Amino acid sequence: MIMGRNSSLEIFLNNRRCVNDMNKLLIALGVLILVIGVGAYMVLVPPSPTDALLYIERGTVEVNLGSGWQAATHEMELTAGNAIRTTDGEALVVIRESEFVYLEPNTELSLDEVSGKKVMLTQAAGETWNKVNKLTGVEEFEVKTPNTVATVRGTSFIINDNELLAEEGVVDFASGPQKVTVKEMQKALRSTMEAQSLTPQDRARFDKYKAAYLKTLKILREREIQKRPFLIKAASTKGYSYQKILDTLEQVDNDPNPVEDGYLNKVPSIYKPQVDRIYKLTKEIKNVKKFQLATASTSLCARSGKCRIWAACGQTSDQLMTDGLGTGCVDAYAAASASISYCGHFTVAQGGQACNYQDKTLQQRCICP
Image (tube, rainbow, N blue to C red; front, side):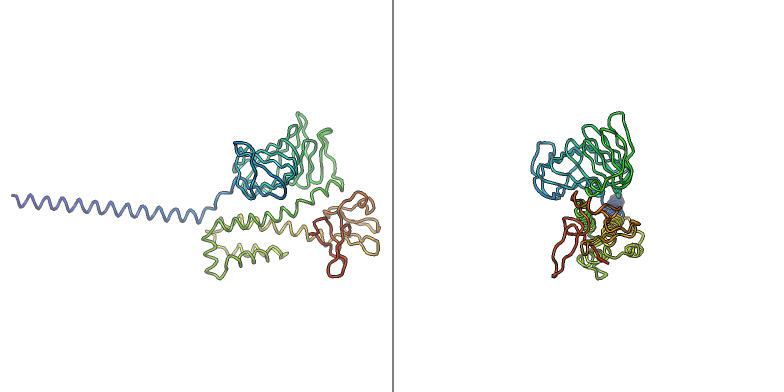
């Protein structure tokens, strides 16, 4: 009987050990599945965009993170509730890695809401240039000044408390009960609340933002790549070092053909969500460069004191030429007296030859026929 009891006890203990071993195995399998699942999630789901990034273009820029104003740092991360102000400086704020707000000197901007779907800004003072791309899912974009509200449907515009200028897209501009829809190449003044065409001087105001916009687009794209180390590692197995990735993207940027579509088609479907923002940023970079190239190639160079005419103007007079944006014709003499940037207005010596440029940055060179 005692032997029987011992045998029963041994059987019970053995069964208990088996159950414990099985539980440990199940736990180990559960942890393994969890790790694999997390890894798969990281591969399949792209990282969330940063709420806001601050790029200091020049001079003094300050931020208020909730405990008073302090000196800002370049490329610092911001979020809803934070504020930025410029004194003698200028800064570019990138919201959700898609929407761009350039702060002119003496401007104060609060980030009221920067969620995935909505961006709400309060511009207490100064002037901003806004470029709304909606590349990362933002559906609503609104800027409030002390006396006006701008609601955007995807556009490029300049706003201060007295006026709104739209370079592209459509903006609903309101002041109290009055409201006006401002379309591409139009502006509205708070004093009249009527849409009217931009003057050549108005259009020239947009020129200064192009270089900063293009530079920051490339920075954002590189950040997107750095967020995905597994993609960098996978590319290295195919002979693409990190530097070669950047060099290839630069070649894609400069190619007038949509070669980026071919690269995207080679990406396995499972990885496409991860490269979607990189692809969209590349598309936008190419659009900006294409615009600059078109502007340079169709703008006119001064020769022997005369101005060549862009054929799209439909004019033959030597007194007419395209403006700095390549969007229309202006009288050359009137433009010169108003100091509007245009091809031939700024000249520098390079290689023993006088080369004409469209703007003060000397970045948009004219291509002479």
